[in-house]
Image 1 (cartoon, rainbow, N blue to C red):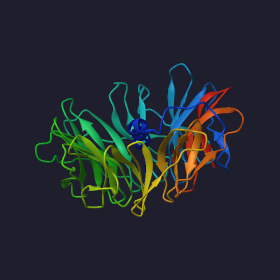
Image 2: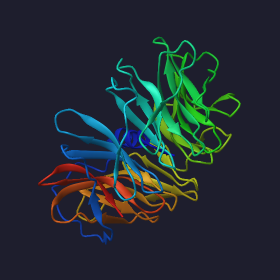
Image 3: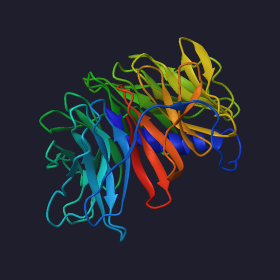
Length: 377
């Protein structure tokens, strides 16, 4: 599964750990990765596109805009043909996409003209199916979907948010709370249907896991009051961060069925934010973006001539993507950066995600079209 929340969280969580202030734009002197950049097309009458989800089949999910405040949720197939994701009803005005499954099924939320979110999946034709809310609950959002179309998310009765898992038939199951907790949300689901997220008493918030029977386990802390999950791979390894004494945040990893353990060197201000199916983990320690691989910490270095780095995505080969200075950048498993080709029209660019086929999703800012979603293949 591919989740938009992973990209949004990376941007927010790691912005504070960039390697310095932005420098003047200059051409990187490192190698430039071969591969053609294509701006994502948009329908006639629209003027821009944005996207942050790509699966291994090369399908992409994002949105197009007419420039006057009307945004259309959109899936691009591998040939970049466009499928609008339809509203739930003719009166519906809101569509939110949260996750993209391996077969192109999209999960998220939409309204029925009431401006209230309801959990939804969209099929290959862009047709939505509303997922039921548990009895007594009035709104919901689907946050993730696995290859078996098991969906997890959250529902609310306008007083408290609760984690939900929907089966293949769309039936909702309210997931139990740990002792003393009042609120919860499921953010991720692995290939086995195990759900992951958080639970809170209102004063503390901890990372939790719900097994396929619904039993809940707190993943623990390092002596502090909170912990959080930032990503989960298909086999059930969860990564994130947890509080330690002295108000520190330490990068954490939990094996399938296990609890949080400290990543090597993950001390002071650190967090793990992405994990692939080999348990390679992307994160940062203080001001240094890092790939943890086979127990080693590999620093992700900036392009020559640039001073700051932001890294957003990781694939199963251990390749990471992001931005160094003003250039979309790919790092190999040794932490060596390579700039992605953009052509003379682009002033700046960034890479958000990379799939297991090596296709990179991001954006480029061109002088004639402004900021547009782009894919490198």
